[in-house]
Image (cartoon, rainbow, N blue to C red):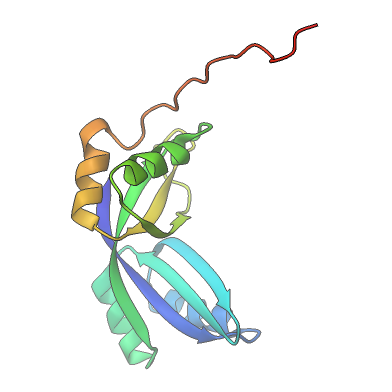
Length: 151
C-alpha cells in the first residue's frame, strides 16, 4: 500500500475530448498508472494517477487545462473473490468513508492483482487501518448453514 497523487480534469462531455486529452498527455510522455472516466451530464471527470505527478501537472498547465490534485491510497488487491470487499470492510469498521474507488492497469509481478485507487475521508487513518493487518488478507470463509426446511 502506498499513497499517490491523483489528478482530476474536467472535460466537456463531447465526442473526441477524452481522446484529445489522452493524446496530448501521451505526446508529452505522461505515463498513467490508473485511470477513471465518469459522466456528469454536460461535463466529464477524468481522474488518473500519473507515474510522475510534477510532469503531469506541468503538462496540464501548458495545455491550459483545469485540474485538481488529491491524495489517494493505492492498495494492492489480489485476484480472489472478496478481496476488495475485505478492504472496504476494514475501512468501514473504523468509520472511514470511501468517497470513490477505481482500479489501475494490471500490475507486473503480481499474481493477477491490480491496484485499487481509493479516496477516503482520512488518508492517514486509512493507512494505519489497512497497514495493521495487511490490506490484502484472504477473504473470510463462509460457514455452511443447514437449510431452514429440511425434507
